Length: 516
Image (cartoon, rainbow, N blue to C red; front, side, top):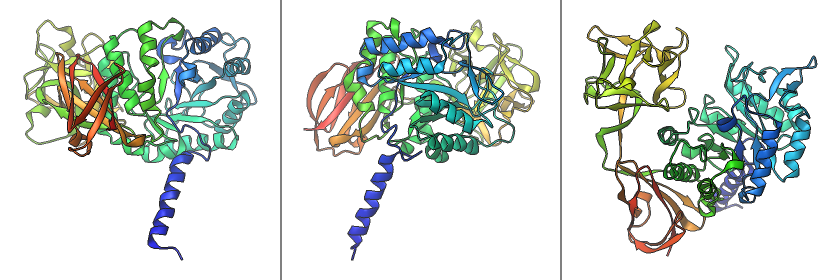
């Protein structure tokens, strides 16, 4: 007869099997975060074509990136143009004169895999044919072409359609083809459902080639508590990498790469690989950092410590449940000057190039602090009436600028009081300030009782940053060997804590702790 311990052991083994088999299907697929490339960040819609894809495939091989694990070559939106009378999706013949099967065979001949894009709605984001009502025939078509990866967006959903049903249908039909697909979906799908119908789910907004944009996605993953859902077979997708696109510094790109790797995000490059700089290849090719991302344990890193928090150093505006009397949640629109002042700090709401919002000291001539009150009580930057302040509630408590919607889109509408103060129309929510730490420690376990740590400098000057073993729930008396993964340098054995010296502004120290 089974003992209590024997029954427990069977449950543990069953859990290990389910964890290892992948959440979406019985295939052993996406056991590690997928690595590869996606066309959108650099080539967008208009510049996507057959020659671009072939060139990228060639470059991934010639640069040695394929040998490091970057194996998926994924085409985003704008490859499709219409459907045949038999309802089969048709690639754009002007962009792909030799047809997609021929192109896919070329990619496969390089030892790489091929990915395509669709949307669960009637149209894609660029108004190309979507998959709604065509899930079965699309799945069969993609399988017949040899597609290995499907990015399934959320644009133009049919009214009253359900993302659970739509994504579930596509997942089922992909499984039914007998071909192994990575199924990547968008963030409106509840996380509790997503891991059952996909291999990866977007965390939030589209990334921009901007430090604050990248950091805000990491913060959203933390705020939403998504780490507990990540495991071999399912990953939280922070969006594509911007490394190499040129609008961040090398230091910021190293930070971007470090956090993506620690949080076990899929690593899909988004630049022109054939024109990679030496710094870009250095960042993307760091084997020690990549090993953290691809660690078989598959545990997503989380925020472990923050230091020197100050409400006077604000970078993120968020939506929080209202706290009566909070001055930090009280904002006043001055129609005569066009400024929006936070009554808790006296600072002004300020737009940024990445569409994020911050509060900064009020400067009368700062055009980024000028706002207009528009139709339906929407707030526009004075410089761009097509953008609106949006309470981005479906994927996290972020408030940022988005394209203005209709009068029925309450995320962008506000209620104004006679004294000029206002609040979002979303019930019970207020716009609040998020205090920013001068430094943060992020960490997560690795195989072999090791630990990966990213020490992030969010301040305005270089600084030393300390991580304590207690921050990581490790014994304060334990001795660990510390290796710096960007310097490729052994730092020695340490007990209780480690301090990284001279971490640059917007930079990180990334270390690995191994029991000494």
